[in-house]
Image (cartoon, rainbow, N blue to C red; front, side, top):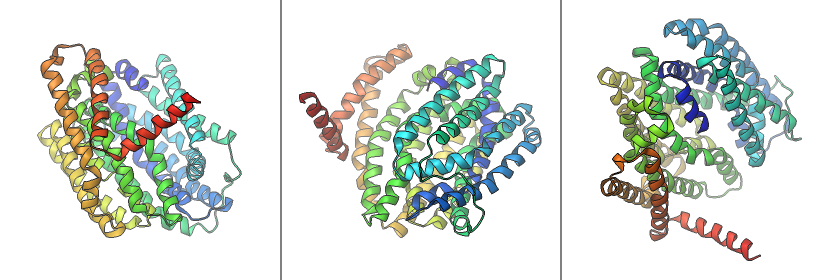
Length: 460
């Protein structure tokens, strides 16, 4: 958040636009470089050091040449967008491909073993180092390249921490024998991951190519605001989802119940947050990015709707991979990515706002396909999904209505953004908490449990 607040003010829309387009392009190669092998180590029933070595060997064979190709082709790609800065950023980001295999294996083993304490420490250190390195690079006149420099320095720091903490389960020595099983697993997973990343980044790439990097940056700020709140919730759980579902599967537990419980707890947070954000988009943009990004405000309500639609079947793709249905996930992603590229291209020919609506339309199609896939392969019907989200939707509507009433009666449109934030951050959470208990959402039991623990510790 600090990085977003600061660099949105230090860099102009033109400069940030170059970075946004370059990172969107690089993200496609980043998904290829690991070939989905992290999921292989998490899902496998029993793993050995040799499995780690084979994964390292496979990822090195993919990641190293891919990094070299990205470096060599950076000028050509930059020429396609008529932006020299894109070439420089791609060249810098290509350096991260040579440390990726070792980071990925360590991360997967620690996730499998639920060592999120180590991952937490590493993520915090990496985030701080990335931010400081980017800031130092900016004041050394690196300009829009400072963010890319920070990302590479941060990745090297993550590699160092994993090297300092290497448990006996992890081996970094590569092996190039007997990795057909890994390739078989990774082929569909990695292709689906690339298509998913293209689905996520194609709006910025299309806008940057058909329009300009500045327009891509303006649109990206709207996406960034919605994703900040969406990812603040989902990223707290995302690292645990596959290890949790895989453990449930290995233990012969009911994966269906585990999944429904997970999405129910997610939606009671995401839907109310995005509902409130859709009403208070202007003060949120002003506080997060500054007044030079006010053009982003019109996209935020539409993108909040996108987040709510995505929330319905969140982690369904992870569930499919965990249960062994990589092909179904891959074919679905082919359709969705094609729709995204087509609809966003058509939408941009009308106006920038229609690109956001194109993303919503694609998300609705994706939800339908995911619903069909998990009903067929995981025996989770639309009725069970609707029941899991029903209370969350009602609470979200009530939070949205209350926010609208606050704007009307307190005239929040005429109040400074910081005061709007203070009013909403005090009233809405209290109202939300009461609604959670009033409707007896499953999250209420979790909250009660935490209060009991806190109470016992105080009494002790």
